[in-house]
Structure formats: C-alpha cells, structure tokens
Length: 257
Image 1: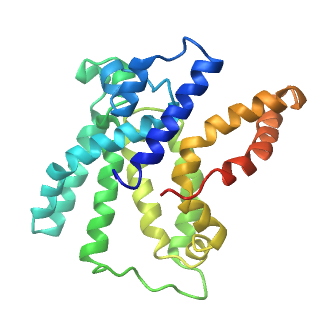
Image 2 (image 1 turned 90 degrees about the vertical axis):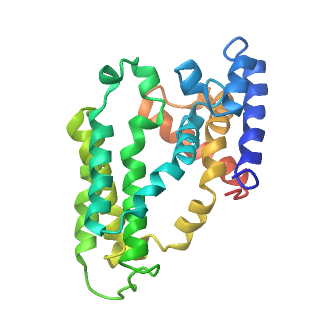
C-alpha cells in the first residue's frame, strides 16, 4: 500500500487542502490535514474528513488492515462448516452492535470498522470459497445459455439498493449476505460474467482509485465554471455536471491503482 496507494492519496490530500484554503477558508485546518494523513479523522474527531470527504472509507480500510492478522486466525479452524459458521456469527454480532450498545455517538459509530466489519467478513468468506472449493481457480466461463447466477444478478442488484435504504438490524444482516451472494453468483453466470469482462468496464475499474480520489475536486471545479449554465432542477443539473466532469476526471486518472 505504501508504494502503490499512499503517494496518490497524500498528493490528492494536499491538492484538496490548497483548494480549501483558497476557496473555502476556515473550512478545514492543519489538524484535519494531519488526521487525514494518518487515517484517523473518524476515530479522533468522530466526523467525516473535511479535507476530502470521500476518503472516509479509506480510514475504515486501514482499520481493517490492522485487524486482519487477528481475523486471519479464523482460517486456522480446520472444519469448513465451523470456520464459516464463526464468520457468520461474528458478522451477526457486529451487525447487532449499534451505537447505543457501544454508548457511542452515531458520528463515531458510523466512522469505525465495527459498523462495516460484516462486509469485510463477507469478503473473507468469498476468499475461503476461492481457496478451498475452487482451489484457486474460478469456475470456467460458460459461452451459451443462462445460468442461475444471471437470475440472481437480475433480482439481487435492485434488491440490494432497497436493502440499503433503511438502517436497522435486518438490513445490516441482509446487506453483507446479499453482497456475498452477488459476488458468488457472478462466477456461476453467463451474461453477468460477460458483462464484467467488457473492456471499457475493466479499464475504468483499473482507474477507480484515482477517479475516487479526485472526482469531487474536479466536479466542484467544473461546477464553478459551468454552474450558471446548468438547470435549476437538481436531477438535470447533476446529469449536466456529470457529462461536463467525466472527461477531465478520466483524463486526470492515470490508473494509480
């Protein structure tokens, strides 16, 4: 991470910081910059990063990296059903834990790993399937027909959007399980798997980290330039801003990831 992801992260932070100092003085200070550099805004300040808001998820990832050596001990359990059962129980417990049970304000709860650990455990489960059942080789691509994974994708993605809308215990339990099922299903599909192998999608996927880091800044800069020409209605304005911003966002994304 230090050689591949850290340089563009720090560079983007300083670019954002200079932008904030110039156009939004007083919005963020050196304390916010230091906390963002060390991925600790959510833990220390209990808030979203003020320098670059989108980097809140990177702070969660760092917490996961630090905890991963402990989570990896789950793989020491020999029996497959017991190992995966422990993953599901741990995911259920962390989904059940809320800010009230931790006696934490929502701002602190929403910006730490406990809130999102079930999603990482879904990833650990998928890695377990990949290593033990697929033996490191994913199922072969089918060339014709329709598989059950296509049906799961057709129903699962709209359902996932509905699941994410409310925030309660049932959705915190259902969302990671549904995400695991969607990832698992794509390897047992025909058309969904072909879609995920389209060159333009895989190219954009390879650029996703730099797009993620810089898109807010580019969109805000574009808004300052073309804002007066956009419609007053929110949705048409967002569509217009997207169409104007997509070219500079793509051109400034050299694929650091």
